[in-house]
Amino acid sequence: MKAESPTLQPRHLTRSMVSCVVPAYNEHDNLGLLLPRLQAVLTQTGADWEIIVVDDGSRDATAMLMSAWTQNPGFRYVQLSRNFGKEPAITAGIEAAAGDAVLILDADLQHPPELLPKMLSRWQAGVDMVYAVRENRDDESVGKRLGTKLCYSLLKSSRGVEVPPHAGDFRLMDRSVVDALLRLPERNRFMKGLYAWVGFNTEAIQYVPDARLHGESRFNGLTLLRLALAGLMSFTTWPLRLVSLLGFMVSICSFVYGLFIVIEYLLYKNPVDGWPTIVTVLLFFSGINLMSLGVVGEYIAGIFDEVKGRPLYIVRQAVGQAFKNTKS
Image (cartoon, rainbow, N blue to C red; front, side):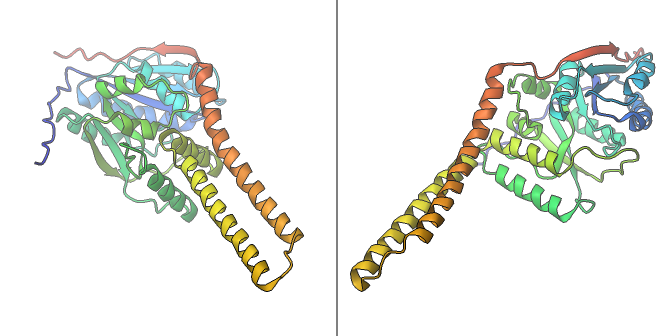
């Protein structure tokens, strides 16, 4: 018998508040262009709204810019004490958000705010989470595309969690989804995996990212590799299983090779070669052992970070207030 999909419950936008979380690191120039566009889109919705800029330890004039914007209703500024990373900054933003619907978008202008009404229409229809999916990755290098494809294919092996490929942090979430995310206590946060883990009714919409007008992306190859490893370590155990399988295969090969040497000596009386074989085998097994220790060490390091119980971030200051619609 085919299971029926849950019935969607419509929501009323004019009685709700919309929160927009914008994590930013050295995005002064881009914020000056993004905030007016976002304000115009939110004003047209007729709902109460707030724009929360989370300053992840910026070293430019972001604080000065936001000190002016927060004089206006609807703009809030959460400044972290240092650079904690994008995942903690997003967490700080959704913890500060008071909206019934919470939108997350980057400050680099690549996530078009004009997509918000379409997301809100699906939220009003009862969808709990609407996430934006890139139509293509033609603007990325071949290496990055292949690495992204490999990472998502490996994440598919995680039990019960399917991370949608080509989806990022650009998404609109219902308050129930935000509350579920805030209940997750881990410090090593891979947000794309956490979005999928909490479940709920989700729906994808396609978009084409705009070009970054100012500055350069801080997500270089090494940063993306660290993020991919964090996701794999948080949502899969296949590295540990791969090491176990590799150790088993090496043991089988060693046994077969040893049996071959014994048979060759008994049949042909060939002297057993010593030094080259021993040195080769020792170096090979040393590499396997070090690699195995490295994989296990990554998991132990994750446990070490979790048990220390340090806060995910520290807020230096938080100013501003939401915009309340006075219309009846």
